[in-house]
Image 1 (spheres, rainbow, N blue to C red):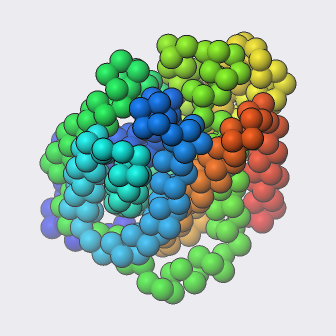
Image 2: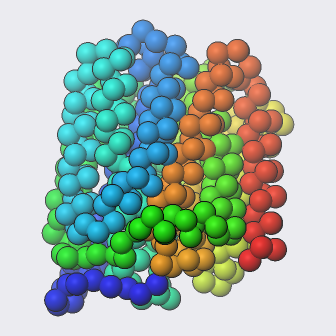
Length: 393
């Protein structure tokens, strides 16, 4: 991929150092905006007088919007200046979270969430595209992995904070705190991302080239199947722990923190190890670790020890795979990176919608012990598809 920017002068050293941090923190805040309801399902359900399944639809329908919105906005905004685009996105998502904090009822909150996430669909793929324009080709995989550490931090730090704030101050305060974080990060993005930074425009023929590339399609399927398995458990972690082992809000927060901390460690290890072992081996290892975690949930869903071990393993491998998938897609077709990264993000949200939808159905039919077996089945499918990509590649 030819790295092009029509910037007339190279960015200042300070800005060059801060820009990846701004993109990583932007992913943290946007990722948390996407996942926030998962940290307060019990509080949302109780205060808005809806069921756990209905509260879970805030995640499921939001993922549907993100699924369709991500490739569409990538195509519509591919020629725009990255600094303006990313800064405006963060500011608008902040405004959407302020509005969500003031929502009078469930229906209004759902509508505001969907509108906010339609805007948020811009950020993650364009952040990956932007950082790939700022670094040499040899550093691209590790730079993309660093930017996606933001999603790890969203789970490691953000969701436990959301759960704590929602439990002590209410879910409205949690949305308000998230809005403040988004606003602050938008300022950092505005002062650090180089101006007049443009990638190659995405044409209709680009989408045709993607559709004809077997490796790209396999990688996108892996993301969707893998995330489906993980999201059978992740967004319902609080209600699952309450129903299976009678966990308190403090215990639930500690499980979110455990998943997030191990996710951060796994992503950090993967971003450093990828140069030595390659993206295929790193992706395969990530899936195997998460599969072991879902098997723990299957083996004994009534044991704190097994649920804790399973949660730690799911966290350890989960977010590392997403970074590897992004890097593999960029390597397969650098000139199509803007589209493939957007479609991978879309596949991620397909998985979120499928997994959270199935998880809600399990709650509705009072079969929450089934999350382990079903999640394991999805992970086995992702493992098989990953092995196919080695032969295809």
